[in-house]
Image (cartoon, rainbow, N blue to C red; front, side, top):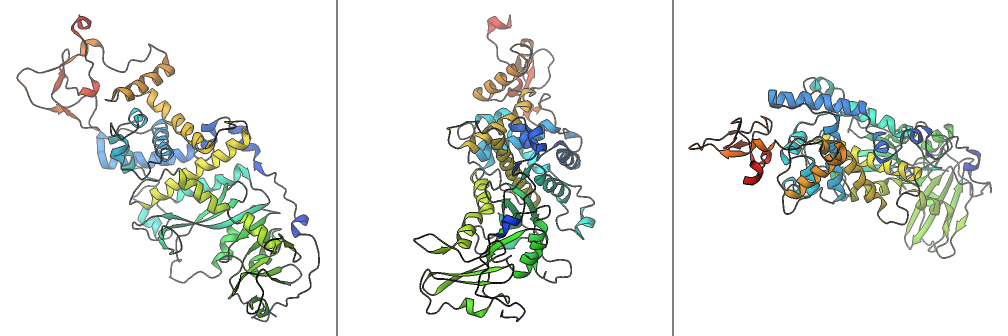
Amino acid sequence: MSKNGRIEWSTCSRNEPPRMAANVIRMLPGPTRLAVTHAQDIKSSFDLFMPSPIKKIILDCTNLEGSKVFGERWKVMDETGLDAYFGVLILAGVFRSNGEATESLWDEETGRELFRSTMSLETFKIISRTIRFDDRDDRPARRQRDKLAAIRMVWDKWVARLPLFYNPGPNVTVDEQLMPFRGRCPFRQYIPSKPAKYGIKIWAACDAASSYAWNLQVYTGKRHGGAPEKNQGMRVVLDLAQGLSGHNITCDNFFTSHELGQELLKRKLTMLGTVRKNRTELPPQLLKKEDRPVQSSKFAYTADTTLASYVPKKGKNVVLMSTLHRDGRICGQEHQKPEMIMDYNATKGGVDNLDKLVTAYSCKRKTLRWPLVIFFDMLDISAYNAFVIWRAQSPEWNRGKLQKRRLFLEELGKTLVRPHIARRQNLPRTPVSAAIVRRIQEEHDGATSCQITEPPSAEPEIVAGSTKKKRCEACGPMMDRKTQYTCKQCKKYICNAHTVRLCPSCVV
């Protein structure tokens, strides 16, 4: 009998095949028909997760915030400018520069020429300062009933798109992800077992084979009233498994329980996971580890659940619960491990692998605003999911090359910034960056159709006898760059970035 006296366990197995044989997965694993139709190239694969409706929300809220902060000086940002901002963030992650100071990325010696070719440092800082995901004027009222109000609209629309483009395989992993963050946040968590210790916790359901993020949920802490949530692990798994049928859910001991296994069976889902030894549904005989030889196993069964207790080393045992396995089969001649443990080890790392891959080329930058931290994670996961779909669509892409994901992210970042570079009106100061802008604009509009600078007649010179500085009229009030140079013909003030230097023969 179990500790609570409600479940009767038996030591006799039914010797039946795994329950998954009776669960038919109706969805074909891999990209859906919708993804195959719309993912024609790398950028369109990324646009599946960051479509125009989501960008429109961000643009409307950002332009609203920009007009409040800068007033008439604010230049309205469009989708091309927002894509360029995404591209710069992704490229910074590709170059492993997400922890580097922003000024260093635009520095002439330590920075990257592509950053200066895309936008100026001031423009990047202004966008990072003003980017918003809601209207902050009515946020206090929404925050009373939703702690995630600052990004709720964008988050919900984004999460709803994740299951539309990829069908997971037979095994789905449910686990937690901690985004490092030490700033002020009403639902910041402290998990000492995690490397970052402080951060924002996200529940995640991923395909165990590809680590595709299929469903996500932000943990916002206790509900209003301060009462702790009961059976939280069970509620999280049931929420994340919505829409699945015939799959096996692999989870750790925070989620696994006999009640959860029964609820999943009602939805035609099976469960496999480790169990905490203080669970009242476990029989005491299975928990004894004294006088048990190393690599020995014990099993207990009900009509639809199997328990396994394995001793990996002296004085320690591991307990697993499964509604998938029906017998106590032993695998491996060396360690004599139960088949349940082998299957658990093979399918438990879906979320952890996603976290590791996303962190390797993360676009996250240092910030004190928690909505921006969540959005950086959304960009990272969107880029990874797009990579999974693109690789499934084009298996011959870069065949034989290593670091395919880095190449994918690099091409994605360059594709996002290219339209913004093609329409730049001002050349960067450094020669290499200016050459990049000229080349892209010539490729976009033709070798002679795009003129970056003023005509030769606009040669600048210092006004005689005047040292007064005024704002450059080409930069505009948003840049607010002061200069003492004026145009020789129209006498307008113009900075070095918008001047053309000619030799005496060319001036004639």
